[in-house]
Length: 200
Image (cartoon, rainbow, N blue to C red; front, side):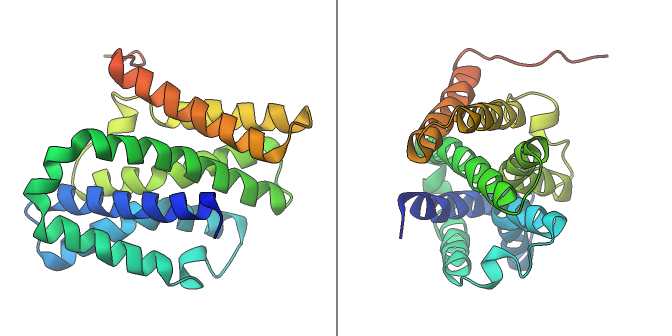
């Protein structure tokens, strides 16, 4: 297993826990918690694959994803209150997760012959759509639409990935640079409270 795949599995688990905790806050039942966790973890990748006609989607042919989601659901159910104490750790994995999901989505789109602009969009969808769906199901305006620089970090990082690819930079270096850029932009935006303008 390569490092991107391992981080992908960790990211799926973290997203599942995040979805499970959000569902708990909304006082959903066990099935509701499991469903929201599943959608949060795999919603982006599933939508990406369906839009590109790449079926069956990834988690249908690799049961490790379902195993990791089951683990995330279990953690959110049994250790929810304790997990909340590790917000910084979860922020770390969440930020790395969206960076990896962006790169994986980009690479898959490019491998299927998509235009680079579409590939960047597919990378962004991979990273954020699960959280968007989670917020909608839980009756909230998605946070990425009203406050945080989240999707924008993915789009910016994806654009850098394409530029470095055109410059024929080594693939491994390109992946690492893109992940670092997305992670850094996301972290700095939260640290310094960078937000896009809100119109009223």
